[in-house]
Length: 452
Image (cartoon, rainbow, N blue to C red):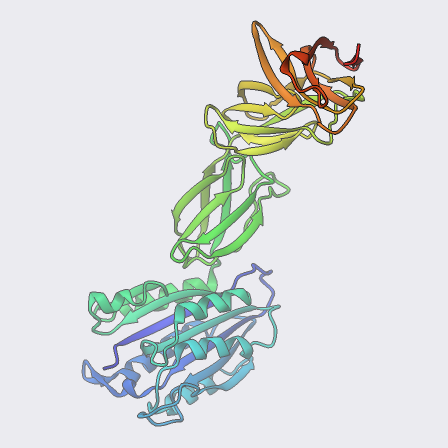
């Protein structure tokens, strides 16, 4: 048995174009067989036509608008019906509302309800995407052709058309009404002022754009942060909907960005570390603000230009204070913005250099100085095995192993006192190990000859 509802669903091209641009409104009207069903003394199609005419009249005074009409379920009798029974009846033009009203007035319900197919096909009814393209769907039933209106909306969004729905249900149970949750706002037909509420709601969407700004807040709770990538996810299915790099306009206010106001969002500000806000919903026809706490400062891990620094190889692992998980891998001499907090650094020099509790303050650059390296040149008369050890108080800390197939090796090392151990491959006893001590100074070279 077919589950039914009377619905108006409104879609709009997402980019905010200048007011003088043309707005195109496509009406998609359900003329399926279930529209014959009686409700409150009249057939559902009579109720639908009444609501449709009120909506048409509310748009009649709009300037610079073009209209068109697509119908479905109006040519092939049900049963069996035809899931491709959808056609553009009145193409886009100006001053054609009467022609559209006449076509709706004459139509008699007969067929089946292919909602996804009709919405997908409607994207081809618009001459181009340079105008503000809108779709209004009027239907009394849910999908009958194994389609998914939610999927159709997502496909339309990929083409720059965004669903802004208003659904009016006739005699639906709570469970049946939930079938439209992924589509949009629901109004019960039984409400005495449902017509005025729905028309006002949809008219507001046509007249007033829904605008959005994301406030990346600093410590003072003012929207001073910017130039951060933001990812917007559909919280219902986890799909990525938008990626924008945040900007401030010429007045230093967060700029306005286009979003589909019918979606509940999870918003990720791709700061270091990321900032997330969930359950974001937008109010239709108004200016919406999404606040995200994102105070940032700058960290600069600096090293000189000494010839032994190997700057092209040295990186720094950044961790959020006392958290062992790697947050970021940072290049030396390349400043990076971080959320205000304390961080631990593991700089991949040889040996590694550690800094703990590095405090990042908003708008301030925290400079972390890494001492310039020196170089040790180690030579031997034959191949052998061994390693370099750093003297750290009474402890010897392993730094790196020697190569077992070289007689001449060079290492860039941080300043300090070291020892090198070596045993030639021809000498099979541990007592033949050679140990030599050496000191590394910044930007100086030390030679260690293992055969003397």
